[in-house]
Image (cartoon, rainbow, N blue to C red; front, side):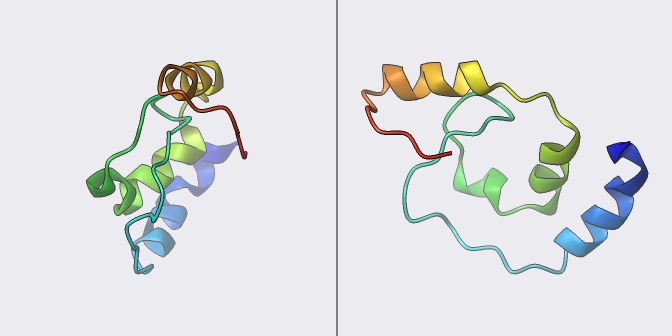
Length: 72
């Protein structure tokens, strides 16, 4: 289970130097466009491990924004 590694993952994620993305991103964690503030935190990436994948919501957000090419 992923719960067993969350604390250790968060500790490792806290050692990484994060940089703002160069292109807009849509999160499958929230199903919406991300903000730079959330992407630059260890908690966001730790939540990615355990959170529900909102793939359909993310695709809907992209479609509503007029996106026609997708890369997963």
